[in-house]
Image (tube, rainbow over all chains, first blue to last red; front, side, top):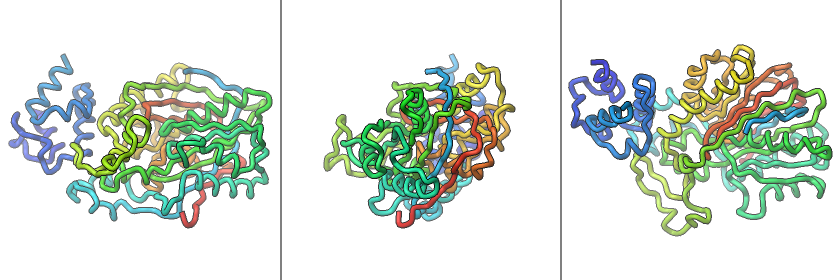
Amino acid sequence: MAYEDDLAEIFEISVGEIQDELAFKSLDSWDSLTLLSLVSYLKDNFEVVISNGEINQIETLGQLQELIQNKKA
Amino acid sequence: MKTHIANVKISSIIAVVPEQYSKYDDEVSNYNQAVENSKKLKSVMGYDEHRVISGNTTTADLLNHGFTYLTQQTGLQGTDFDALVLVTQTPDYILPPTSSVLHGWFGLSEDAYCVDINQGCNGYIMGLVQAGMLLQNKDINRVLLCVGDTLSTRTSKQDRNSYPLIGDAAALTIVEFDKEASGFEVELMNRGSAFDALIIPAGGARQPNTEFTKIPTLADDGNTRSSEQLVMQGADVFNFTQTVVPEFLNNFIKSRDLNWDQIQFLYLHQANSFIIKKIAESLKIDSNKVPDAVVGKYGNSSSATIPLAIAMEGKPNNHENQKVVLSGFGVGLSWGAIMTDLDNLDFLEIIKMNGA
């Protein structure tokens, strides 16, 4: 699953840690650069543009996935 | 707005930076974020050192220093300018206009036209357009465009989103009427609905400064700042620079039946080198034509970054008959571009203001 691998690389964690309930903004690696990497990755690979406001409203990877699905739909 | 401004040209540029600088490596410990992460940021964003004013030096002081040097070097004096356009977001006063202060210091004639424009990242483009439009008046032959900001004083030292990239600088540009000159091809855009993407919330009439607006607070993004300091919605601004700006620039070129191979330089607002590299990638333009070194050496001084980038690129006579595109984008949101022929300039230099 490329998506999990990519997220693991962006968040600097192992693929096994990529779970729906993971609160990604609590990770040690989470900072403005990680945010930009995520934003840039989603734009390039899913043509989805996410905003600061949208990121502020979600906590977990499951919610991120939901956001991406909703924006693609 | 889309227009052509005929018979005008840029004839001299002088950029002024304060003597004092700060190194990113020395600032890492000010931030709440882990040192490891901050080091990674350095290489990606191209941070190294940036100029920050010392004491109470203002943007107007930097401009005054530059004006003194420019008049010494060129023999011009205040009365040789028919208009003064000042673009800044760090004026000396709420009132009077800082262009009035400069008018007095520089000794312009009493019938000279003076105006302040509150613009930042796209401010150089806005200022050039204003100068170009003034030059369509037959009584106006030479305009002094003054740009710059000293935003280090309005940015939290504990804000890793903004402080590492902010730099203080100013620039003076002489814009002249010339019957032989090709003029400016101009496009200007605005998106006021995103006015808060880059904002200093307090200090204006909407939210006057109080004892509370001074209090530094830990924000959701992990940075500490007060309401009197600059706050940037990093992801939103980044998205804007990677979607809206490249599309705008490609259309700008295509609608004029040109391609990037026919442009010698694309001088982008120096937001940071990461953003510039990514825009250059999207445009598929040769990255050697897109200078990106200003932030790592001087910092991002909003309206002064484009003249700094031009001045870093070479000597006055390095610009023989070059077709260049200048483009600013950011606070407003406001963005735009000017295509012009940058011929040999009378004067092109970066100077340092000692003690500032």
